[in-house]
Image 1 (spheres, rainbow, N blue to C red):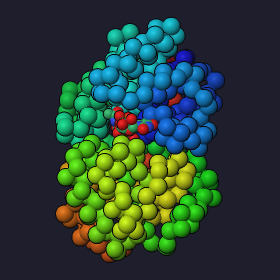
Image 2 (tube, rainbow, N blue to C red):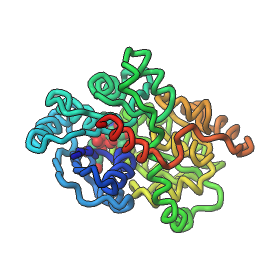
Image 3 (spheres, helix red, strand yellow):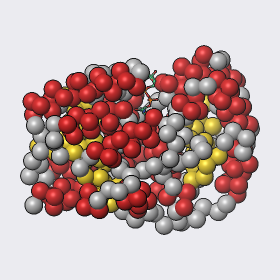
Image 4 (tube, helix red, strand yellow):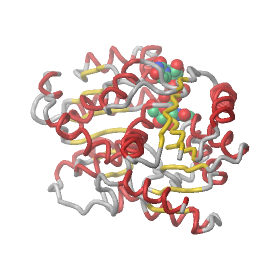
Length: 360
Ligand code: UD1
């Protein structure tokens, strides 16, 4: 069976790679890798492909940045041509980015059996563009692969028929396990000159970085943390633009925060694995820190990944309570909490088995 796999933006690549490898190893599947080009910088894309041993994509749509409508529309126009020409047996879309929605719409209208990997997550915050993408994609995809039981519950409560849903687990952790030896052989903290205890910061959500006043408060909070825990901050391109416009990059650097550009996957995970805590607004890092048992302070009002709070190491914080929350998290003994079910590095196998079952 021919399977189109869509990769678009940085957080997609860790979800696509394990599945691409599993499908490539399976004699009955022929994966076709399609990169929409939503992320295009070397460290946002090519270096991560290399880390995850992904080949050059079979198709590159080269769509790039733009408004939500431009980005979504351009991906639809470009992907429709390929979908029509190749008529895959399955289309697999991952995550919640604009390209996920764009390709999902194309697949649904061409009646190509479409699977959403990482279905059912809900922040219940429609100010988040990703939440709109999740709701729309889950409404139209044929098969919904969830990472955790809360995903199943959300979908069922929205009226999805149970036969569309399979809980396959968290595929990002397959990527972690796949490259664990490389991560363990990489001494990124030492290479960056970091001391024994340090924190990793990432920020890129529009709700945190687009408004100068909000961003200024966050930077002040980070500078307060820096006096207790040295911070390293790999800066997303969106955030770099906003920090620079307000002169906040200089303020962070002057306060001692180590600013670096976006890092490829292996170097970044080496930083996270060695950290005392992560401070972030990313979805994936909430999950990776739960998997690794590292405290995570999430600078958001809500999360579509509640299992990282109920069963993991995550807590929701804001600029005002960040320092207190960090003190509390660091004072707590590191407990060996159970990892959520099916967060075990074997999700891609379950995905392939589910496709076979649905074709039988
Ligand atoms: C996108 C996703 C978000 C995901 C994030 C991870 C949507 C709606 N958002 O947000 O869900 O968590 O990726 O990174 O799909 N840019 C570069 N180089 C790149 C990519 C982007 O310079 O390789 C610049 C763009 O020109 C733009 C900014 O970064 O100014 C934001 O990029 P964009 O892809 O629009 O959204 P993200 O914030 O990355």
